[in-house]
Image (tube, rainbow, N blue to C red; front, top):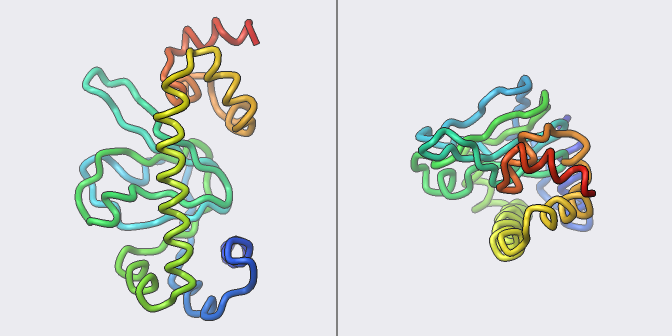
Length: 189
């Protein structure tokens, strides 16, 4: 599994970076089952995860018990509760494996140490933050302005893997529509 992370970092930085052999031993393997929650709301997020295989959902639960998905993360992506991880404060969201997953994770203290001591690793961290910020802003500014059918079309065009891998209930949660609306609109596509 570590070879996937090595290749990912090399691809991100454009070449095999110096000190990569110092970084990789700090990651540990983690295997999760479908439906396994790896972070609960209220827990302090201790890890950043690199997804080797599988799909992770980041979501919140509203006062009525409904899930609202912030994002789905697939292979070769990073996932954590960025605010909670960075500040070591209780999380306001859940992180769950929606498929069996093979993950590489790095503990907070090791992550912080590497970010300070290895400039190439700090560059990866900066990219993780930028991608997360850009995805959040795009979602708020774009998807919220679309009606339900436009959101479904956007998802098909921009994230086809999600459409083919996940249940209608999960997709509806991501799009901010009810599962019933999702089923009704499928016929119009």
